[in-house]
Structure formats: C-alpha cells, structure tokens
Amino acid sequence: MSVTREKILELGENLIRTKGYNAFSYQDISTELGIKNAAVHYYFPSKENLGTSIVKTNIQRFEEMVENMNSRKFGEWQQLEIFLKIYIKSHRENKKCIVGALSPDYFTLNETTKRDLKRMVEMILRWLTDLLDKGRRKKVFSFHNDPESKATIIFSSLVASLQLSAVLDKIDYKGFYQSILDDLKP
Amino acid sequence: MSVTREKILELGENLIRTKGYNAFSYQDISTELGIKNAAVHYYFPSKENLGTSIVKTNIQRFEEMVENMNSRKFGEWQQLEIFLKIYIKSHRENKKCIVGALSPDYFTLNETTKRDLKRMVEMILRWLTDLLDKGRRKKVFSFHNDPESKATIIFSSLVASLQLSAVLDKIDYKGFYQSILDDLKP
DNA sequence: TTTTGCACTTACTTATTAGTAAGTATATTT
DNA sequence: AAATATACTTACTAATAAGTAAGTGCAAAA
Image (cartoon, rainbow over the protein chains, first blue to last red):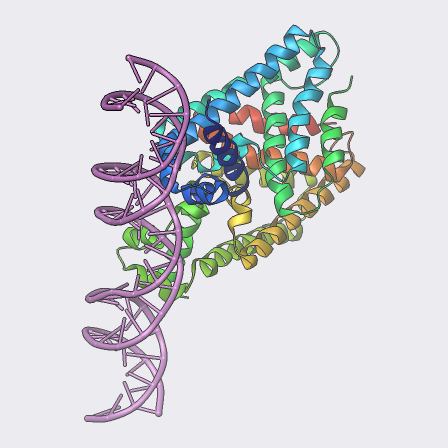
C-alpha cells in the first residue's frame, strides 16, 4: 500500500479525533502533507470514502487486539486493563476515541460510515458485555447490574471522559480510570 | 424579548443538539422560520454570539432547576431522579444534551463559547459531586469511590448514552438509567 | 523504444458558508 | 405631521468546501 495513502488515513483519523468529522477538510490534509487536495481525492474519491476507510481501520485494530488477547489467553482483569489503556493513551494525546468523535455527528454522516460506526459500537459493547459476564462468573469482577447495562455504563463513561477532559483542561483521569476498576473489584 | 429571537434560540439549540455545532448553518434556521438569513444576523450578529447565547440559556435553566429543588427541599434521591429525567427526555426526543453536543467540537469553538461550556460542565459536576457526597452521608446513596470520581462517571455515562443511542437505534435506556440508580442504592 | 500505468498537479466548478451594507414597511414617539 | 426605532428584506461579498477533468513526469513492462 502507498505511503501517502497511509499518511492520509492516519492524518484523517487524527483530524476526526481532534476537530470532528464536519470540521476537517481535504485542505487540512493536503496542506499538512505538502500535496494538493486533488491528490487526496486520488486516493479517497470522496470524504465518505475516507470516513468509512478510517472507521474500518479502527474496527480492524479492535479485532486484532481481541484476537491477540484471546490467543495469549489473557485473564478478564488483564483484558479490561488493556482496553482501558486505549483511553488512557487517547487522553494523553488529547484525542477523543473514534466512537466519541463520530457519534455526535451521526445524523450528518453518510449511510456507509453510519453502518460501519454502528458495527464498531456493537462489536465493542458485545465484547465488553461478554468479558464482564465471564469475569463475574469466575469471580474476577463484581457488580450488581446485568452485564449489558454495566458494559454500556463503562463504555459510555470512557467515551465521554475523553470529551469532557478537553473541556476541563484538568481532570483527574488517573483517578477516574482507577475508580472504574475499583468499582468492579470483588 | 422578541418572539423571533426566542424561536431562533430554540431552533438553534435543537440544531446543535441534533446535527452538532459545525454542521448547522444560519440558512437552516432562516429557512425553517421562513425568514432571510440576514434576519438571523440581526438578532445574533455572529454564530459565536448565537452559540454563547444558547449555552448561557442552558446554564440559566440548570441554575433554575437547582434553585427550585433547593427551595422545595427535595431529598437527594429525588434530586438525582429529576436530573436523570433531563436525559430520559432528551433520549425520547432523539437529542443529545448540550454538553454532549458541544464538547466533541470544543477545539473548533470560539473562546467565549468555550468558556461558557466549561463553566456549565464545572457547575453540573460540582452540583452532582455535592449531591452524591451529601446523599452518602445521609445514607441515601452508597458507593465506594470518592464523590467527584463517581459524579464524573455518572455524568459521562449520561452524556455518552445519548450519543450512543443515536448510533444503536435500539438501546435499552430504561434499563440503563435504572441501573445507574440501582448502583447507588444502599 | 514505445506503451502503459502510477502518482500526482493544474486549473477549474459548483455549492455553501458566515457575514454585511443599504434599503423598506410598519408601528411608535415627538 | 415629522422623526425615529424596530424588524426585517434585498442583494451582495469573500472564503472555503467537496469534487472533477485533463494534463504531466516518471518508472516499469511490452
């Protein structure tokens, strides 16, 4: 695959995760990469095309992470910690996650990007629900609600924490992530 | 105050809460109200001006709600339920809350709107932290973390739940809100 | 050596955006 | 009756957006 193409994908993702889908333009990308906006269209004919490609890349990354954790037979607690690390890293880089960046603009997205984003959210919630369920049965986690509600609460907290931390320049995110874990301790 | 002005404020808020700040235009407002875009500029010279006015309206609404609950001497549990009802209503109307609609676009906002939004988030979190703290001391609530972390987790969950429910056309939000309450039961 | 394909650039178009300056009809005040 | 203020409209501007058609330089294949 072309280096320029990869750079566009990476920069596009960063722009979505910092400025949002409707606030970034092909000009932003071309200027940064020192090429013309038509060159961006050469690789990604439409913004819709670029948008879906970026979401698909993220889906793939998530799938690879899960596969990797399964093949290495990581425990439930460890898997949750690795998942939380994604958000700690995003936090450090002052970026939202792709779900938190695109979901608020959902109604303005095209059908393909909508479908991919939906698929991604469903995947994450299904995985997290399963993890919580399995973990509780093994007495690794403890919580009162049903696993699906708990998964939604945790995922929602993570998604919005990245958004709010941009507003409140100082947010005690170490304490925040720790208390999500503490909450699940048996 | 002028009726048109009020209509612009209301419609502008709805547009921000459905499409997002960067996706709505003065044209959207003028077309809907059957006036010209210059008429919108007559009341709100700039989009910045309209944006801050909308946030300020929301701050005022929140302050009035808190004042009202205090003067009526509502208990902590009841106050939390009333607060949750804001999100249940938003959910029903397929809208994000103003914080969840603007926070993802924070970096693209102007300084005044940024400041107002920040003020609003701080107000809500301070109020919720206080409520949880007071409620726990009165044995109305029970939770393990410090009140500030718990407040951030709950508020984040609420903010993002409205975003995710747009993506997942079906989300069990009754169960979701109930499990936030259940979680706090002694 | 010619042809083909790749990775772009040049030079546009069309649509939409926020914003403005000047004018107008209607009601209110002087 | 004349002046003024209110609530707009008309008619724009300048900037930026996504997107496109045609051309160019260069390397590899035929």
